[in-house]
Length: 299
Ligand SMILES: Cc1cc2nc3c(=O)[nH]c(=O)nc-3n(C[C@H](O)[C@H](O)[C@H](O)COP(=O)(O)OP(=O)(O)OC[C@H]3O[C@@H](n4cnc5c(N)ncnc54)[C@H](O)[C@@H]3O)c2cc1C
Image (cartoon, rainbow, N blue to C red; front, side):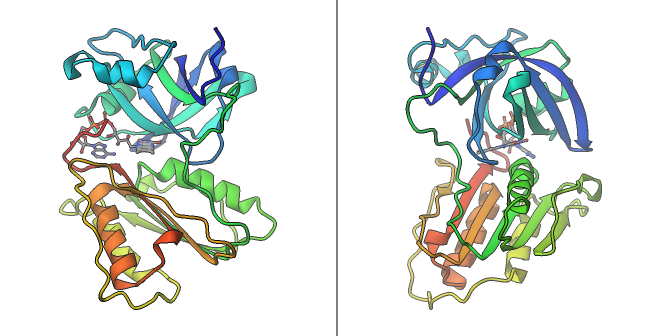
């Protein structure tokens, strides 16, 4: 049966891998089904299902996979984590995913550290044959935007790299300020560049720094539009232990400023407080996304 759901399950095999930097490994997956994969934006997210006890995942392709997966006791679920499509070459049946190698504490990083060509995983990814609109991405800058702020840590660097590539190909280039926090100086990678881009690498060389500390500090140096007075504004709390912090920008016609900020959840929450409460920025211009949580597992 051909699925026409916006997201469907793909069986894929690791074809090869290459290290982009000491902490970022590009894994290229292949398989005939990848011909039917698609991507809508540079931050297109997918779910990857990893082997459990050495057995390749076998998530059913019919029906609502998420409902069936959630219905299982936690101990019986195959591990699932969220990743970004870095490049899709559907005509060659290949998809690249850039994995942060953060050690062996989680199933995804452990698998990516050890995986060898021929190893199998499954992906829930956008379906080219979908009859419904495909979502699963937040990079939706308003037409004509003139000033963009990008902030990412290493987990959001694959998306940010794609965003810069997309921006650099535009005829009317906006002014972009980008901050990228990475584990070490050696993790700075080549990115698309143009005259209107100011790129700041933030390398966590100091072992006392927590992931996100440098981003929190850096946002205070960012060039930002003039905000409204916000001293009385009550910013609602988000319980980031229970929920992944995720606030989407709302398109504003003729909007001049747009921000895309993703990384460790506590850091994103601190940046949210600064931009909205201290700087009084219009939250409709801000995408604020927790990609992972220090010391905690999000599925
Ligand atoms: C929309 C979206 C897109 C994403 N895209 C990518 C991507 O393209 N590439 C990518 O590498 N990640 C990406 N991530 C982040 C990734 O999903 C998480 O890092 C995930 O937790 C990794 O799973 P794991 O099994 O390795 O670790 P988990 O089992 O989730 O966590 C185990 C432990 O490792 C810690 N941990 C998790 N991630 C990191 C990290 N990066 N550095 C240090 N410690 C960590 C946790 O705090 C926890 O203590 C994305 C997340 C989202 C929401």
